[in-house]
Image (cartoon, rainbow, N blue to C red):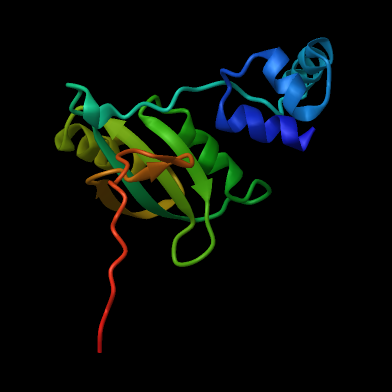
Length: 159
């Protein structure tokens, strides 16, 4: 089961026949396993990873550190749910360390991201503070390298 999940995570365009050959199952069995994993919400969806920098789209992506006051009986979950409901939010994670949550958002401009943070995110009850970091360039995301570097020649150092 885990092998099938890893294969789908790395390339969800593989056919049932290809997946079956790789995990030692018939295409029909693979289809059944995938349906079961979807039904159990283990597979939540399928997604293409796009290098938007290679297109004419000019969105801005930000990583926001959020400190929150946990709520009685629900801890961080209720605040996280309020945050991830916003369309701008691409990801929301509970963290360990000096802040409580990481929120990743995209917008058409710095101003749009700034407005989201100041007018929506920071006004949620329980949010104590935010720190916004803009992503300047992606090198690798979801195990995929965006711009492969040419192979470097081995260098020798003489002392």
